[in-house]
Length: 456
Ligand SMILES: Cc1cc2nc3c(=O)[nH]c(=O)nc-3n(C[C@H](O)[C@H](O)[C@H](O)COP(=O)(O)OP(=O)(O)OC[C@H]3O[C@@H](n4cnc5c(N)ncnc54)[C@H](O)[C@@H]3O)c2cc1C
Image 1 (cartoon, helix red, strand yellow):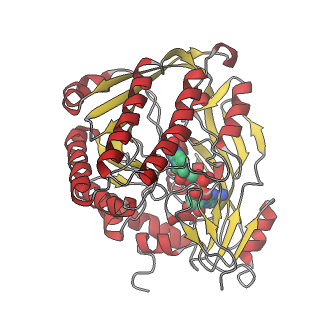
Image 2 (cartoon, rainbow, N blue to C red):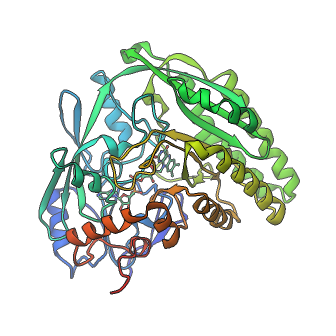
């Protein structure tokens, strides 16, 4: 019997757990997982609940909210150890005071440490660095489904690789240690391309010692690339932040608000489309002409979204493709976007984005496991037609041999998961059964995608 309704941050994913508990101690988590009567299965831990898929849902089960366990426990020479519910941005701000920073500065400051160490994330890889936060998790502590405390670190790389992809299916994370780096000055600038220009120049761009994040408009054929690189160590006082404050205001507030109003106020699809492209054009202009700097503060890229989302909220999805085949895949995405619009009248109302992420086998479900990838990610205010578009997008991306993320690619099917990850799904599932033989932590979402109940 459900007693509560829980929505994710955007509001589109709903869960009906029997019980929701905001935990404040490890002992409380132990008591919950051991008491199957009072706290029915599945038991799912969540952080800020920003995921765009049902990965944290627990229908008729128990949701553990970790946000109140948010202490920084210790600093090492090049590490920080933190409780699972702390926000990434809060920890990063404390690191900056000590002349340090996280390696991967994802835009979502509200990401919690618990999710960051055992789930999917993305930010364009800085030269020589990974673009997935979990790759820098060097120690993870969990409460296992039987209530035992469990710890994994770099002394067992194989198990750590699994734990970094475990999404709370092996145990509830209560603490994690991340490797951190010296604070650096970050240079940023943007350049605009057409798809043909980008295709011609990509081989050269890849050899530049810079990260690449893309803002893509298939309807106007513009690809605006954000290039970033680090200079040597620096102190926060010397670094500028205004560029990121402006970018963040436009990206997290004005653009979705514009998209929201345009989508709802103008019945004509032509007017909607023209207004969407007009605004997207202004964003591209601002990116290329204004958002640049020689020495900016990396952590200023992060956004602290309001706890409760308003009309300026947005949604996205993501698939990653081997960079050697990226252009052909992106052309197919252009075609899908335009053909879908012509056929249904629906088009995504914000700029799509893309990230170049370096090859990385640090976690089992890494989407760049087999080599460096670039993604293309539709972004939308979630108006009617988004889900139908996503299903076609998923189907196209799967056919193109892409790889999704369990917490950021919604409406996946089991076939698409198997196609993307192959034998890694079975390898994961075998270990999941080992750590959770009674499926205490398994929700319907993962049971279906991992085939956990097949043959039972
Ligand atoms: C507006 C917006 C912007 C975003 N921008 C980015 C971005 O720039 N880069 C990026 O990578 N992602 C981005 N995301 C996606 C987001 O980072 C991921 O969905 C992330 O998982 C959210 O973190 P969370 O703390 O809210 O996790 P939740 O959604 O609460 O949980 C995610 C998963 O982790 C599990 N989990 C959470 N805590 C624990 C724990 N303590 N123990 C075990 N399992 C746990 C949950 O069960 C669930 O399966 C964005 C999302 C939104 C809505």
